[in-house]
Image (tube, rainbow, N blue to C red):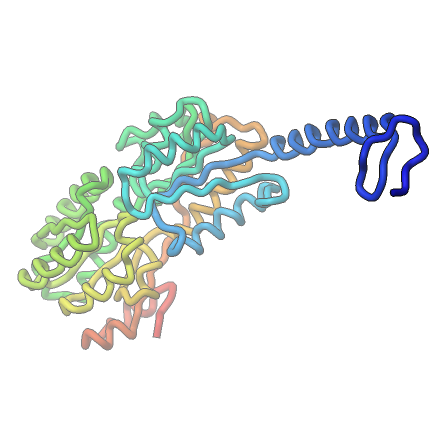
Length: 342
């Protein structure tokens, strides 16, 4: 076997290397490995905690990434994202939030309703939190003030519950002789308490009777719609809840079977077959959450970042569904719709 020219030889691939060269090579590798590890650790990791499912959240996830990009952060280049999805099961949120704390993430982004935000808040009092919720975060006790949220938490509210009166007014145009509206709610959502009060107050001014139906699982959803069909309401109002977003494909099919016009809280329902939706542009709120996350990574404190209120609202009408229901949509509604699906 060919040998390297040395008196003290160490086996190497294809021959031998001198001991001095081997020590130099080993020392260089030992120096390089910690440097690489430090470079990897220097890249911040943010936790993304959602009540929803990745299979139906592509649009809002893309909007969040866009907000990060506007702040100078791109996944894989200068930050990592650790995604944790509860798939509509609120009980999973706290363990998932605690797992993100164990990862020592730089920021936790809690989205998909107030349950995710409260889970993150319960898991840590030090790691910055950016949330997207559907109700007033002061009223539900998440923060102390919209302008100065305090502590380690800030974020966006889509204020969906506050849009209830407008939704009922639009429903009135689709069911002008109606007297009873069915309200579909998730009893496990804290936000439902506030939305129910708003619906009852708005319906009273319009002299409509409200009948509530609860569902938090797919089986309960089927049971609720069977009960709604028996009651034969003049209209249906779907509450703003992440579980209903998660199950929007099944929900819109069930709603079409009862034959009454149905109002949904977000645009996402309309392409899935929902008759009409009116609410905040959720993607815009997720984009803003990405921007806030970038600002925090650059040193901003959550306590100094005011809660962002919605600025974009959308009304979408699905004419295909209207035709299936045998419903004539008034030209006055079509004229003010932001989008019409034909």
